[in-house]
Length: 307
Image (cartoon, rainbow, N blue to C red):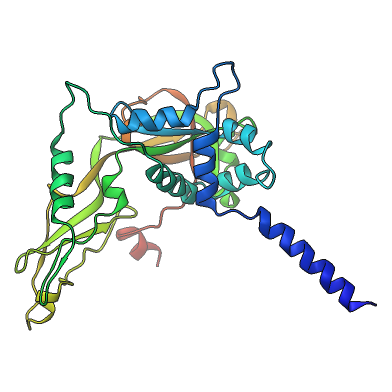
């Protein structure tokens, strides 16, 4: 065989694939900036959402997967993008949030608009900035999660079928699933820590720690230059005023009676509701829920019991 021709043809294929390969963040930015509705108005749906979020009129960015499917059919190299988003929804929710942060328009102040306590606190942190002296560091850069005032939600597309609780398996972990059931228990709305602000009692250094999940281990040693030169380092304390909390609620959803086979016990799922979706369900409601199916590790007494 002619190895030179085969090698040259293979390199040509790799070059054509590389031209179509676009980073995920750029794909999300391109969709949010260029998608327009199919009606005569031709308005930019998601640009209008970002303007409302910037002007404090909206607290959610709802990505409709039907719009994403329609948009990707017209762009070369984007055909499989909606399926990739649905199979790894949690990661792409954060990517869409970062993309929205990059193209977020500036806030338009009106006559009656006033800054709330969070805006004043963020302005104070920005004025402090980053100051590095010989022995002390003051206030690191604020994380994007702390500045963000919206949450990203995915709406199911046309290809997502409504499933039963019993049909959701381990192969669906990480996927965006839609299922139907009956609410059997609705918990109280509680605050959930999303970004923890820790302050040193010796040098006043502030550090921000992002919390992922229900539990976290706070940093116990001050990383500033002033405390690193001392033998006993300063102790860090949680500052609730500068931390970020969101609303959190747990809902128990059980499969409907007509979906339970004869002689079987009804199965249930625990749904974690956050942000503006709290207090939207009551016990006894028949609901269709779209969310990310994730496992929850056992902690505490259950681990010792089954160890």
